[in-house]
Length: 170
Image 1 (cartoon, rainbow, N blue to C red):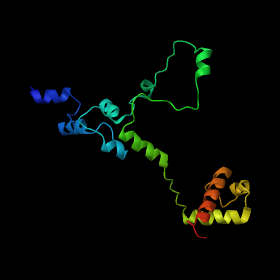
Image 2 (tube, rainbow, N blue to C red; image 1 turned 180 degrees about the horizontal axis):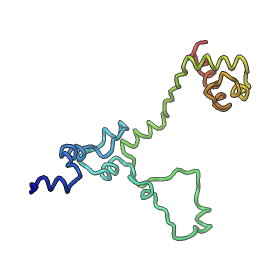
Image 3 (tube, rainbow, N blue to C red; image 1 turned 180 degrees about the vertical axis):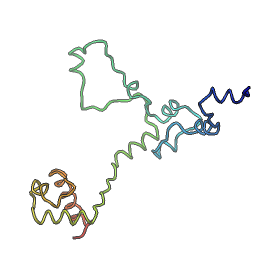
Image 4 (cartoon, helix red, strand yellow; image 1 turned 120 degrees about the vertical axis):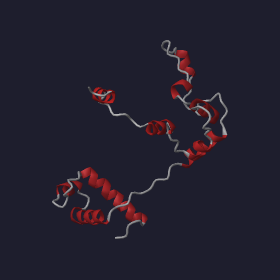
């Protein structure tokens, strides 16, 4: 006669999982906030909805703007609507929203892509031979990566911009 344990292992083909893995999965954060301004003002004890309302942001953009879809708008309401005026919000702006608006007004800092030295010599050779004829560059036998005329045009323009900015010295 077979033992009880042997019968159970024969019946159950699924291996048992370890409980520490499940505990770690439960403790893992649901999402990560990458914005420093929002993460500094985030309260971990509150829910996501409460945090967004305290910060002054909308959790759902669809629910924040009320759109009535009960029929076609009348011509009177269309004439009254002015496009140039900004949308007036009912809630006063918070400190966090003002900081985010200032950050957005500054704009993003664009970083120029590094151009490899081999690519510089390749493009300069093509430009010396063909000038601005990008179709001829695309058909050239040195174009071993089979880059299209548009790709070569974009790369040549980026190269010339980097040369004029002083990033690359020829």
